[in-house]
Amino acid sequence: MTAKYVTLETHNDERRGNLTVVNDFPFKVKRAFWIYNIPLDAMRGGHAHRKCHQLLVAMCGAVMVKLGDDSSFILDCPDVGLYIPPMCFVNYVPLVENTTLLVLASEQYEDSDFVYGADK
Image (cartoon, rainbow, N blue to C red):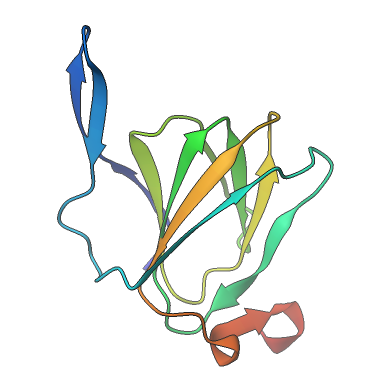
């Protein structure tokens, strides 16, 4: 399985704003966290997960997601997510200040689930 964009269901209302929902997950969400205040010269990630699936959503700003196979994806709107399957190495690079990246994960935090470059 490879990483892929996921278009999220969005309801637009000019008077009241937009509402985006996530339905029909390919996994059960057990954990959610967000990454923010990332300096523009910093990179996050640098690992894969043995069994954890993730859905990434740029809630604000823009981020480039670089994968271990040298492909990359840009997330810059909150109605498009990026599905990351297990064993997919990722790095997150903010493209603008004040970027917030939401991560929905299939597993609780478990240190043994992380795989770093030397463990490939």
